[in-house]
Length: 563
Image (cartoon, rainbow, N blue to C red; front, side):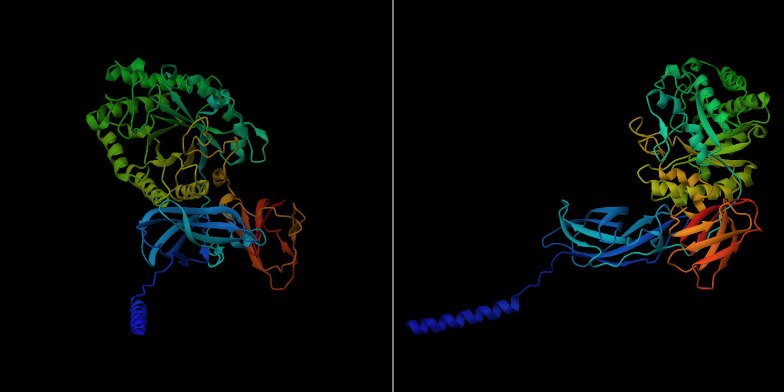
């Protein structure tokens, strides 16, 4: 009986084993893999480069969703992290097996190309798979993913059309009164106006409120305060733009509140008040021998000004036209050479511009007294290229439809992404030049925390300009910002200054080619070297005297002076 039971038990175990073999379920472990990315990545000096990274992932067993991070980093020769170029988080993505996901990352021209990085450094994509509570499960990095090569192989010749480049620095005196100061990127204390000039800015924009003592402005940006700043700019030879807010505080598309003292005025009294206020501004400037180059008649008057009397959308279009006429006539009566500006926001919205300008004309605008249409543009990370292109189209529309010049009197971009801000400014300046516009002004670049939480400044908290401001430099759009005046142990150019020839010596590398650019980005001279040497001379007797940049082997850049 025991033997029989033992046989039965043996057979039973055998059958269980067979059943289990047939019923085994394979469970795949969580994983993440970089499937593809566009390398080499072309990084345009105009637009930067957009890196598309495709990944595939498998979630952990039982998961319903996952979080992800996909980024681009610079690593050193020991595969250690140096800095992040760009990165994006994905939250609550669908869980599954072999699920695809894509990310677009931005690589701006503030970053060196791969062949300009420090020796041994390289760009690396990293991708991480997390639980939906951000516990890391798997990663793809240098151990299993190839590095990224960035290049610039498509030449671009920037426009040399002359424009004004400026900044609205209206908060300067208020900030200084609270103890804020300015310094350059080497930590040297500086005065603001000379520092701005070093970034090739040649103009400032200054706002004026009617009675800021009667508002949260606490008296700042009244006529006297504006004159103080205008004098500092004038001492540096900078042009001045006056931005009149016909309010005691902010006037913009969402608010055009009458000054308290004007609140009960009739239409004719408001016309007189507008004219008198502008005349008072111009008299105050004339008293210190300053003539502004431009005067705005109102600020971002998309829906009129001096609401509700001059609110265009609620029956006030004709009054709006009267107020613009009163202001522009006051300017031209005072000095016909001062250029008047009608300023609207959202430069990419051509329909709104046609509605506003066309409506003013239909309601009696004296268009002969308006010289320029001023624009604002504050795009986001996902639309800055499109908004700039549409603004360019609108500038052409304004010239063709209304026979008016256009300029960007306000631009700004998130201070959390100075790399994109830099690229946005470069692209905006270039498109304005292509449209034969008159200028580009950054609004309050000096604003930073803790003075204000305004998110679109272009200054660091230590009081120095951020890298975004380099976009205004005349030479920044030619060659980028890396490898200028590099160590003489690597590249030596002599004599410098030179009148006839440059001697070039490149350590440990053979000379292949050279390109010489002027400060406007024009290619002046170029050539190839076929002698397999690391030292050679270039004849420069035939180029005009001035400052130039020479680029060797599409890698190293050096400034020199022809005299």
